[in-house]
Image (cartoon, rainbow, N blue to C red; front, side, top):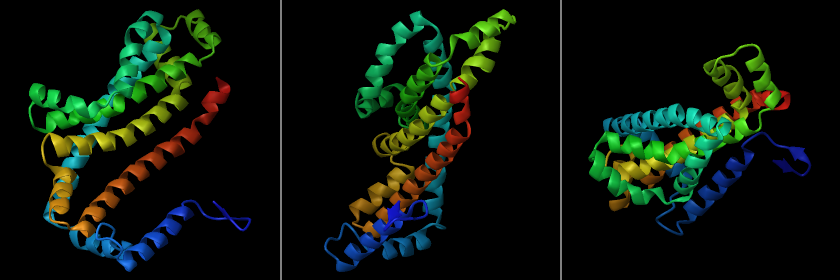
Length: 250
């Protein structure tokens, strides 16, 4: 961000928006948007309480398990689609359908199949994240120079060797990009799961605070969720930049 020709530090725009938020909150134009300072005071009061710690633990467990399964399944499937035309033609329409479909509509089906517990929330989280991971891994493999694969075969590389040492590393920039977007989508998936399937974790806190019109508490929890998602996204973005040379070599 530049101001009057000077380059400001990263995320300076967040400070500007924070000042604007504080000003609007102090004017008390609406109960829905309290002052940012009041929200941070509320956060300092609730972050060490047992309900908040329990909600954070439940949300983190569902989130990381869901994204783990999405990555573990999505990357191999995407690579297989990129290197095998038949598999690509079979799976690509379904991947595009699920990526563009309103996945929230599938939540009642998951509740019937897997119950109202943690399993359904994990599956919901994985479903929100996996499709973009698959497509990006596929796109990365499509960009690989065929000479790399031919060289691997000429040196007697097994299919597993080619998979792990050629396809994965050559497609790594796109894979990391897909994982980063998948993590962001997974945040939405885990909250939807906790609101619709089983009122637990941050979903339970959102439900409680909104019903009781405790908007400072509501925004405090939401800011924590935004901060976690933003931190993960920035960490993965930094990894993307570090492996960008793979794309150039490719």
